[in-house]
Structures are given as structure tokens and as C-alpha cells.
Image 1 (tube, one colour):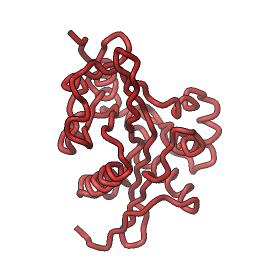
Image 2: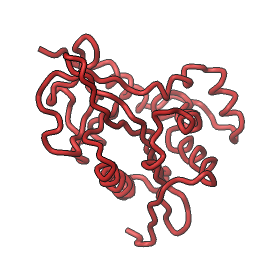
Image 3: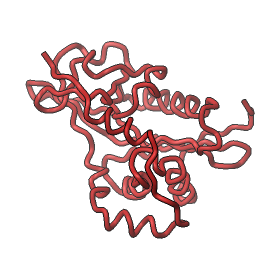
Image 4: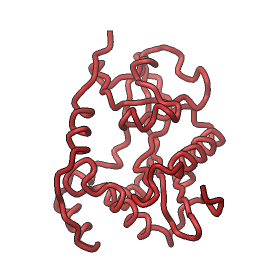
Length: 218
């Protein structure tokens, strides 16, 4: 791996480059087209956004990766709340994927999250991509959605050992992605970028299966 790598906090000068990178990384991956670049755009003004954990990765002066975090919450059956984190989008430019850059970026962000005092991260993602980074099914730590359902794609990583003590926790994600439901707003934002073809590919079916598979808590 090339050693000329810099991981640093995102600055306002990076905003457009990060949005363009996100679009390149996610286009046609999970649906035809994507809305992740719009999510990046609106996330920065949401109160749950954690700017201290917005990082970019540069290789030889070229911005090739980024990750962004929002605050999320776990609530136990007595109503006690634990503030935790969720990340996403996390992306590496397609030309540099599967070369270890995503690992470097995530591990850097995990360490900084620990330094800020956060104890756990819950995400929705393909388990194949994240179990090597220490994520496990939320079922293993008694974390579920309201109603006791645990999607296969809902994963958790403890940043502090023992932070999740076995009690039943209900996950509440941030509302930061809610604007992405506005298809007209997404389309208007996407029109600011060079045209790209929307098409089907097998990863979209894999995403569909992961999103609709899961288990019920005992």
C-alpha cells in the first residue's frame, strides 16, 4: 500500500468533492441510482451530525475516501437512554476499493470515537463487509427495533468492552436521513452532477434480501 496517505477531518472546502465521491461509490449499488450523496449534503445541518467524526482519506493529494457519523440512541425497557453512534455513508472511490483503505479509515474513526467517550456503534450494513471490523449481530447484545425485531443487517460494535450489559435495548436511529424520502429533492440535487445511467445490478438484490431478513427476539 502506498504510504502517502492522510486521514483528516472534513473541511467545508471538501463538501462538494465528498458528495461527488459518495455518488461515484454508491451509484447503482443498492438501488438504481443513489441518494447517499444527498444524505451527505443534508446531514451536515442536522443536530445529530458529529463533525468531529467526519473524516476524509487522501492518497497522494487525491480525496479517495470518507466517513460520516451521526448520534443515535439505545433505550432500555425502563426508559434509560444511552447515546451511541451510527456511521454512513462510508465510501472509497471505486478505483481504490478492496485495497485496505476502508479499513484504515474506519479504524481511525473508531479510535477517535473512543476518545470522545462513545461506547458503541450500531449500523445497517452487509455483515460480510463489517464482521472483520468487530461488528456482530445486534441480537448477540440484545439490541432490537421496537417490537423485538432484529434485521440481519443491523450490526453493533462495542467501543468499550462491557458497555452493552445484556439488558434489552431498543435502537432509535437519527432522523438525519429523512429528507432522502423526498424523491423530487433527491432528483433536483442529483441534477447538479454529471449525468449517469441508472441500471440494475446484482448487488441491488443482495441489498433487498439483507433488508428484509431478520429474527425476532425471544
